[in-house]
Image 1 (cartoon, rainbow, N blue to C red):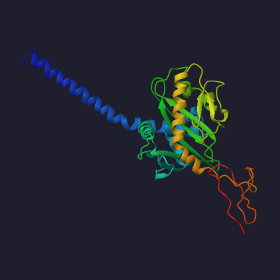
Image 2: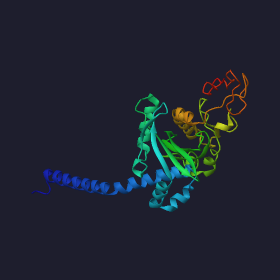
Image 3: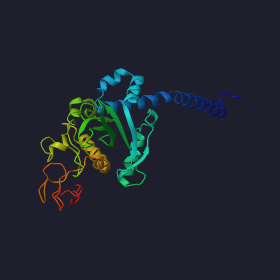
Image 4: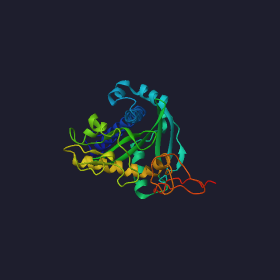
Length: 288
């Protein structure tokens, strides 16, 4: 064959390109299981950090195997709910059932559309004899996706911890949602106000109308903070029916027509005791 001809050049180029493509495909296929394992371990470490089992640095130092072991030892149950707060299906508590970022992105659209296909994950851990419930959030930062996990106490209203991550936020500014432990610490002890809209806020310093259900934005990272606040509010609002239904029922008032005083349910004879004005309050039965 004439090595100087066009036909040779085309054939040679085609063979080289095909060979390189085959090598790259083989390498990608070989590395994929390890990459998937790394992503799973990273996702689990974020949940464990949010639930206050470990710091993120401690998780990083543990290595994948120890992180997966910690998850298996502490996970109590995992399941999904719909937008009505109803359980849809039980998840296998094994690592393979962890919802990754692609899955959260799909659920983000389902929430926005109000779709019956919404299948929102709930992870319940056993920590020091108490249940800690972890739910995800997902949204858009300044330059790309942001996501994270909110951990809630047994009342499903009090935040015990949080962890956030991003795809490409600005180092030293928006990236602080991940890199700055003091920002994440602001969430601890705050409340999810399921009766309000938004249920939680990330706001400019000194502008919050509800300090119990908000944290200060990151200085110099306005758009990232705004995106994170919207993501948290959007997802926690979707979880609100679930969070509300699992909260302790409000008690009746202490007497006829009285205001809610925090007493145990109490009824006077042959009459119905006055109850909290909240429509979710449970009225006392009529007694004889």
